[in-house]
Image (tube, rainbow, N blue to C red; front, side, top):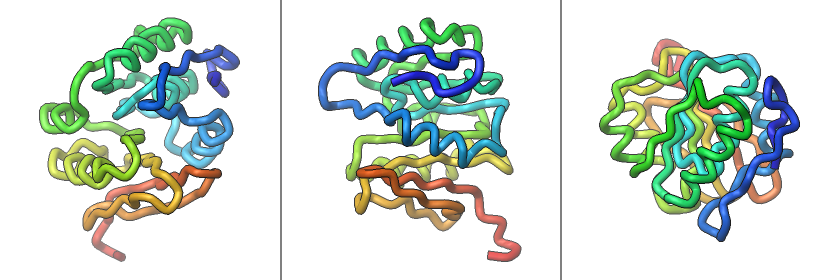
Length: 184
């Protein structure tokens, strides 16, 4: 696993031990960032369920101003901190240890890009998307990049529309934006 592009290009990243965290593969990460290129660099990024921190670090490497990483697994959080240091993007990063849903309830920031990669098929994907809407955490033209297991949980919301869906092996990626309600 490595940083694909930008200031930290080529830097190897550490993956958390065990099966609780599934880092996004380089191939999937590169495909996602090709899709979301028009939204980068972003002012404010959220890497929720951050695991290794690879998605947020990639965004920072590509010039985004700030990223908040949220992780509730102590070992994964330590790896996120190490990867941020290895990538030399720590001056633009905050790492929060805690529950993702609690963070969404307490945050008063708006994010331009939100990466969501919760444990598969737990209902957390849709729950997180609902809280993002309820707490107005996505900027007007912002996007949510949600990962799920292929044929697993799909994000559902009355307030966000799926702009793109892509399948990569056992992973499905959804790009969501706020509905405009004018033409939808």
